Image (cartoon, rainbow, N blue to C red):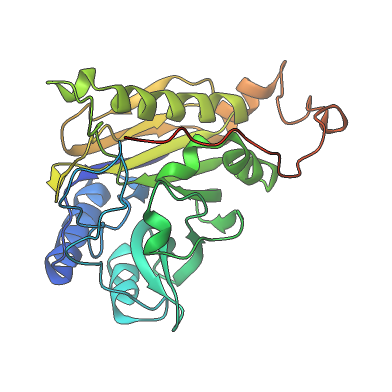
Length: 295
């Protein structure tokens, strides 16, 4: 079993599509020089995230943004340019997708052959649904580095999302994010911020519970009133952080024997095999307490 070099980026991407594409090309080339076979780029890196100016509820996007990301077609020139620079590499890239009538917060899995698959963000944080339609499922795709699943940001907070990809055969999951620091109880240091802690905890838990290699890319810097926590990382199937940028921009790079590490992690306690679905009860919606009124 041969090792594979994988990488995840923490970087700032705004509305300037041409500048973003040039940055993507530079990041791909730098990764190629390091032997990277799989590169995960942040959520919305081709056109920027929602530009929220006000201060709403904690982490919410229910204020009207001053601008929306430019909508792109899966078969359009932007992803074609990503494919051209990717060549032999597999690249996961975030963009605002249009199907002609609706907009989606999407991540494309791209290589020199073109777009291998697209994930539309399913779980939307407060107010994001005002600007994007929600995706409806989770499917892994076959790539040169093996079977790969993609998630976007808040998707990682739901164990069912990563589990669905693992059950679909994903040995690697790339979660691309525009994950901000807390907006109402922020810490002076990003490293001490409670939302940074959540981001890191979700990454390690999702890798461990599914025993997969986990790539976590994120925006860095700030956009509107959002300050992103960076914290790109590669996590092994035992939940161990193999590489991280910390709260600074950069690229986390790790070389891992994907098949070998999964075999080792799953040898004695194989979480997917040892599931007892018949014991978990209904998956139908349940009535939850109403959210308390806010002053």
